[in-house]
Length: 418
Image (tube, one colour):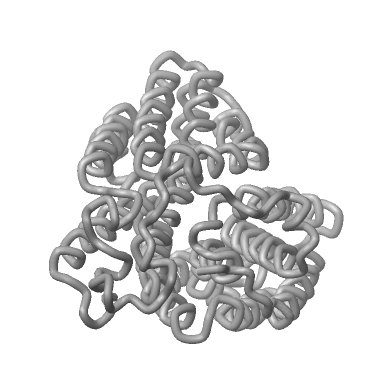
């Protein structure tokens, strides 16, 4: 996790940063999306509303994010990730509180507002975390991304169960209160212990003494938030092949992830797999995803993000092929290999354009990727309604991931100056 020669002071601060980042990323997955599995039915029963109304806020947020991601990255460029991450956690706490208030008052609108805040600022918080890692780590950046990515695999395997236990023990309001307090505590810890760059703590990237640093980036002090001027405009980005390779590939990965996870039980049961076995697959392959996440991270450091992206695209295609050809274990493998999506999103962008340019380029590329990802749920449901099954949808996804493999194969040029 640390390069040879990293100072003890750097290691201590970096470990604190990684621990806070891991818990933060876990919470973004839990409250940004997975909480739906637990709160949907209680809201429907208590308010007497439809499933669509119960999770309306999270559904709306899927589309508001197409625009919001641009503004999130712009704010991070001006404020720095430290301040904005603290604010995001407080806003998420407020969003959770609104869900609890809306439940008590039987108001779908208040719950929807809370859901919009939770989903949008969970994504903003993830972007902040990626930027902090980009500023603190260079040679082991991929591995740290892998550690943080493992939080999503752990979240997929445990958060719904944990929230259900809280709900059964404390009730809906008690469960939401615990979540609200948790995010406030993490917000305070973030404000106290997280910094944008190691230079703000009198350290250097990777913790190496200044005279030992080999790259030009780490020899120079980092500009303060708002001082760095990006050379990338929307027009320049769209004129580069690599921009499209990164944005389209991440979009395909995100879409595949959402398609499979949201229809995981239904897809396996359509092959004759029992519900109990589906749950076992979700638990086993989800936990294996924790290991796979760190493997992806190591591959990014050793081989580079595009080659890792090729491996991920191949594994995605194999998993999707499991659904195409009715091989349940191959399909379930997706829960292990799909952890590549949250790791490769920052890794690819930083590999091609550089850590300093991450927010400036991501604010445009993320719009394209999110637009593709937002099509996932209607893509699956519309094709299912039209054909009476999932075969056509999974065949299209298989072709899309083969295309993603080709995109990673031709994504070779690097524009990073650092």
